[in-house]
Length: 225
Length: 225
DNA sequence: ATCCAATATCAGTTAGACAGATTTCTGATA
DNA sequence: TATCAGAAATCTGTCTAACTGATATTGGAT
Image 1 (spheres, rainbow over the protein chains, first blue to last red):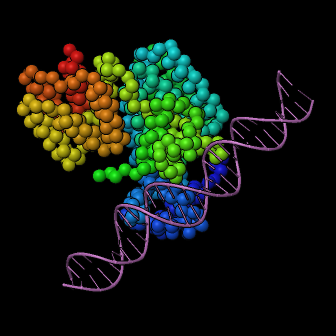
Image 2 (image 1 turned 30 degrees about the vertical axis):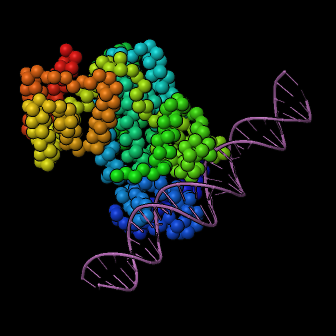
Image 3 (image 1 turned 45 degrees about the vertical axis):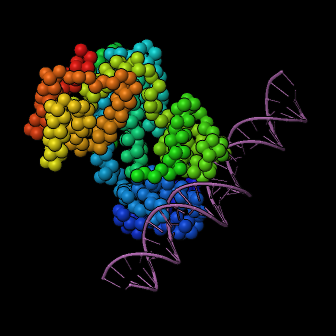
């Protein structure tokens, strides 16, 4: 698993500090030197944690002044997704519904034989990953990206990349969304993807768009029942 | 101004390195020491950039082994030629048709009073610019962007920004698209935009989406009769 | 009370060092 | 020749110590 690095502990430590000390937005964190001696690590390590905190949008460093809380890390509340995360996730599905359904339609209409092969391979990889009950996020993304590439429209592809960057950024800033999946859900996820791939193989644009809408809708329900 | 930090340049430099050297997923990056001397900075700064790259999911560091490409940063498709300008433009309308029509629908359903005001002002500015027969590209973009902002979905907004960056990039690489417009076209452009704004004002989602589709379709015809 | 200058503090950056993990090279063995 | 274990080289992770320039604070003069 995660062989823990010191910087990870520092990251967690600072998040905990913000929560336990109830630091509000705009409040200043202890200085890097101070944090280093608090955690019993070097300033280098604390700095690495702060860089990542800032990259995740939680803190902001002002040179000469200090590091400040920019957005409070959401506390983990059992199985509930934090409000902010929820809104962001709903928003992402909204955009995906629009973009991915049409991408699936175009892919079905235009796919080349080579592109179909890439899609089939991505589907196989996803099916294997899901059946192994392992994390399948990467494989899922590969398949969806392959579909965008089959649209033969570079702007579509770059839109996909951008959208996923944004979604990743938002989700990573919050709670880990990976959760154990019941076996029924695994089969459902495979089947939904297969419907999309089948439609693209059959070059049926309407069916592909519909299947993709269905898949995204089900995904949304799985995440937020 | 953003006084740029060294680490930002290192981050950009590494991204560029991955693209120009065409490093594939799994490939190893130069070592931190090597990158430091390549960029003429200390290893510390390069390290900070790598930490952020890893945090963004682009790279992965394996202790003792090196840093590896995990996910390729979205390629700026600048390498493609101006000859493909026509195809790229068609492609851009394809994406806009998908994204903007739904944005208009959501904007109509959700717009606040303040957002409606911003849209109205943008419409006024566009009308004035068009009637003065001057360049109206900026005003046009402002209006379209205001509509995206009224969706109250930050991912939609960022998708708009990204899409326009890409389109601008492609178009600017080729011939200047600004051409003299016959007066009839000016009135048509104003009217099309007004239809969209009217629908958003009336909070009629279907009408807004339809009007936006119509507008984009007409724009495509104007550009490529 | 107000303004300004000296002072203290802080993030950003540099250099050099060492531990521990991993890869690569090398040479001996089967 | 092919293989494999050990040695050497390389790499990330961590630490120390220092300096710079930006920012905040303090204290004194007005």
